[in-house]
Length: 74
Image 1: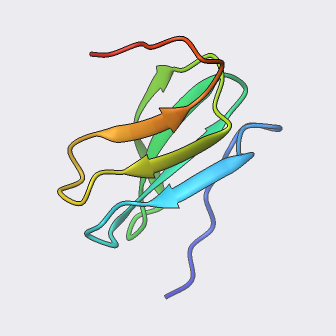
Image 2: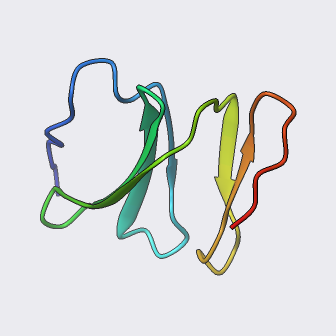
């Protein structure tokens, strides 16, 4: 299935699929977004200042982010 995501300009410079294959993480314009791939809609967004790389954990509950060297945990 092919899906187009409606993202703001400059808002997708990093991306990763969640392990379930049904959701996608994108990062850009200092915002992390979670997308539902079936519907093409954004599920949630939250601020993340700097992302050099990102990877979801195998269970999809957390995202590991390499950024500016400052640890931020929630």
